[in-house]
Image (cartoon, rainbow, N blue to C red; front, top):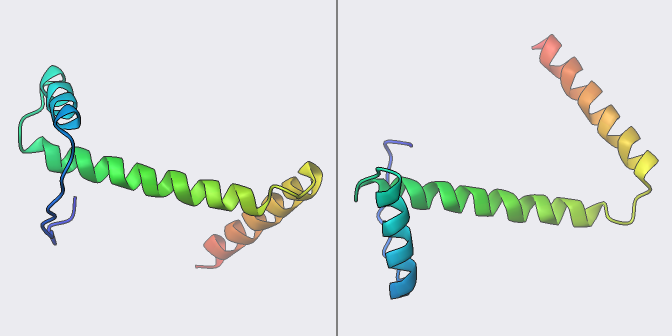
Length: 84
């Protein structure tokens, strides 16, 4: 986690609070680990939503055309990495 931190104030249901704190306790985590747990959960959720949006943008593309597009992108990335 970054050392440049900001403070959030969030509200969750009592059931969610109990479930998360119970989960953390079962896995040997302490109260201070709640922030790390929340940050990881938020990062995964943002990633999941981003991937869903990307997938929907290619939903109407034929599988072979999509494979070709991915191959071209990977090749271009590898060429860029080699020239750096």
